[in-house]
Amino acid sequence: MGWFEIISLTIAGFLAGFINTLAGGGSVISLAMLMFLGLPATVANGTNRIAIAIQTFTATASFRHQKVLDTKKGFWLAVPAAIGSLLGAWIAVDINEEIFEKAVAIVMLFMLFAILYNPEKWIKEQKHLIEKKITIWQVLLFFVIGIYGGFIHVGIGYFLLAAIVLSAGYELVKANAIKVLIVLLYTPFTLVVFILNGSVNWTYGLVMTVGNVLGAFIAARMAVSRGASFVKWVIVAVILVTSAHLFDLIDFSKMMHNLK
Image 1 (tube, helix red, strand yellow):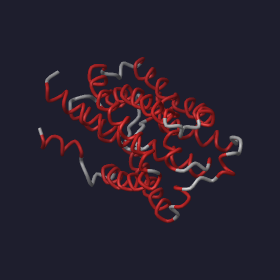
Image 2 (cartoon, rainbow, N blue to C red):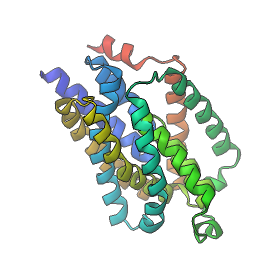
Image 3 (tube, rainbow, N blue to C red):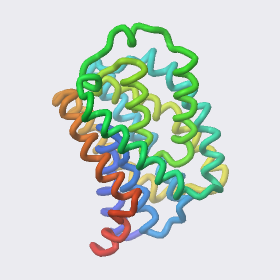
Image 4 (cartoon, rainbow, N blue to C red):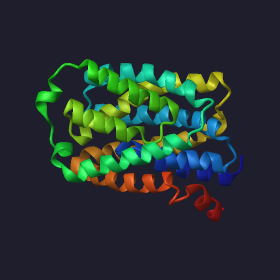
């Protein structure tokens, strides 16, 4: 591995870790970089899970240290997501991802509309929902989200944030903390599936992890210091860019090729 690969993976990892922690969709950048450097889509998908696992551990520790993480509620929401992620990861080993990417882009745009149409719901806590016990509908919801997370992961942050804010009542900073905890708890299971199927490049994955960890640490600190309103506008911006990529309006692989 040369310096170009090391620098490219580190920068892509930093951007992915920063964006994933504050919003979601950062894996668009990391996956594009891994495939640009020659990894098949399935191997890139598996390799990306290495950095995600350590990135979310860093972000979770930072959120917990800053006392914005509801560990108990997050854990019980993570259980159905982890079970679903195993099914999604097995599907991901063989299936084509293009149709799912377009579906994600459409859902993201609906989420963008919801954020801009009723921003107060995303910024202010709804204590009556926070205090409620987890329902069977939430279990099913997070199980389905887990399937998608195990399958491709791109955009999983948006689905988790929407579910945590709208069904559990947390504002965006605390929802982000629960989101990274859920991803942390299910990612090792999906990583094992990819490892068993020979779909992980450890060298690329560990190099990218360095950038992911740094990006996640900075983003977690900024989320708490800047507040929910700042996180909201980061999410709006990232949704627009990610949707443009998934609709083939922006080609990150081509952009990186031009920079080489």
